[in-house]
Image (tube, rainbow, N blue to C red; front, side):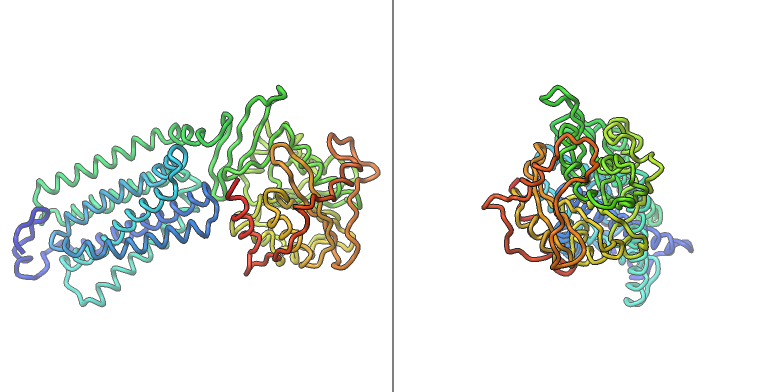
Length: 533
């Protein structure tokens, strides 16, 4: 092989034999394969996770990212065929570009979402470019492996893909267990980009330093150094960039923001039209409450369910502890178990002064036990019995949430109920999402409960619905009432509850499907109805 622009092979390369390399260089190259594969999978996971946080619809986000990337990998592999004669320089250049695009991918998409409102087109383009570069790695790395030591094609492919797949495993585990908790999404992608540049460029150029022209080698190293410098600069500025971009998404000033392995948590604070402070909690961009009128929602959620026996209460979701605050106003409540997936949410409710003031420091009450677990899985192993259950999950706009509104979930819930238990489920908006709301009611009924649907007005949300349920399909619907010794309330009374069961003609019970794990109808309804709001 004659000298090329990017590579200069040794005489042995001219004769078709691999150049001589010190022992261990092949292992070092396979290690580079391992690291690059881990980085590639992290980029893929980062793109799908970001889409799930910003847009929701995690199944669609995952499908689009994986499909586009796999397609682009095939194109990249074909595009790399002419570059195999210049494999060292070509591979180093591919890794420089991959480190740059992959490292900045989260930032690019966040900016596209916050300022340009072009998230989906940007995601497709970024996924395609990352997939194109990842696909180009394999044929080039295969060529480099053969330069070190000739092998039968099958053996070489086996070695290559073993390192590649094990690297993907490690990258897939590191993303949720290490990168997200330690760095967050934006900084985590930058760190991976830097690792990618070092492993893919410096290691390979060092292994083949005698076969690459000095000017080319120095140019590629300078390019890698420039990318590392850019990634480091963005890393230093990442917090400011993220705050600025995030603030574009919210009307009011942000006073707290964090991204956890489960969700994006944002708290804003401003002065409402009434002149009082307005603290708002958003999860993945969706409003959870406004301090101006949250009492309306939480009184409606809690007090009708506690009109019967209430010595033991189970709260599923509700990590902000506002429903818990209402429960603890009853002196005869002896124990409350709160099950919430995200420790960061309950920690915020306990430690962040504005939230702690709103929930009356409910999480410090000795009657409360907090469990951090997925409610579906927790119910599978639960053994206790509860007089009242309050279900305060976000709306079922993702597959993970839809399972918490399924027939199977309500069947599991039956294990912790007594014959006289009362269950309250927040059901979304009968006005904005009537099919979703009535699907939730139908699902509860399908699971063997008698139900009483009702709706109220919460100014921050609009019209909002709940479903009061009791075990025993075919039995009398549970009466919607307040306890004889209900503490003083700001919104609810018996007249309001009597009116709440009356739905307008255009929002009365609809013919919709119940939702199951295999047929998450409520997810379909929710996505379709809320996309216009």
